[in-house]
Image (cartoon, rainbow, N blue to C red; front, side):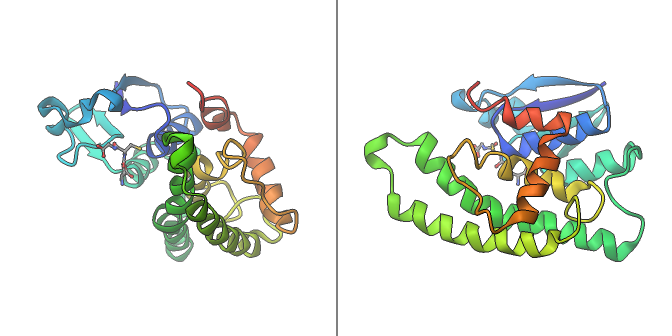
Length: 206
Ligand SMILES: N[C@@H](CCC(=O)N[C@@H](CS)C(=O)NCC(=O)O)C(=O)O
C-alpha cells in the first residue's frame, strides 16, 4: 500500500493529497509532526535527505518533492488523466506548476507566515501590502489565461491542483479576489465544487 508522510496544513502535502483523492488512490497517511521537528530525525532523513514533507513510499520506492510525486502518480495511475498526451500542452501545464511553486506560492506563503505564524504585534503590514500587490498582478495573469475556460488548461489538470492549496486559502487569509478578475472567480467556484477542495476549505484550523 502507498504511504504518504504528511503534515495537515502543508500546501505541498495538500497538493499530493488532492491528486491521490482525484485519482481515487487508497493510501496510508503517516503524520510527520513538524512542530516536534520529526522531519529532521535520522529515520525521516533516510526517506528525504532534505528533511521535508511530503514523501510518498510505494513499496520499496521512495519519492519526494510534491511536483515529482504528482507526476509519478499521474504516470502510475493513468485515470482520470491530469496531464494531456500532447507534449507542448504538457509543457504548458508544467510551466504553470513551476510558476505556482516559484512565484504565486511565495507571496501567499509570505502573507500566511505574517498572519498565522507570527504574534500580532510583530506582523509586518508593509510586507503584506507588497505581497498583495504582487498577488494582484499574478491574479491578472491567471484571469487572462482563464478567459473562456473552466480550468487553467481547459480540462482539470495538475496545474489546477498546484494552485488549489494556494488559491483556496486566500479567503482564510481574508484576501479578496478583485471582482474584475471574473474568470479567476469562476475558476475558484469550479475548484470549490470538487470534493478534493475540502482538503483545504475544511482543514485550516485543525
Ligand atoms: N519543494 C518541496 C517543499 C516541501 C516543504 O517545504 N515542506 C515543508 C512543509 S510545508 C517542510 O517539510 N518543512 C520542514 C522544514 O523545512 O524543516 C516540495 O514541493 O515537496
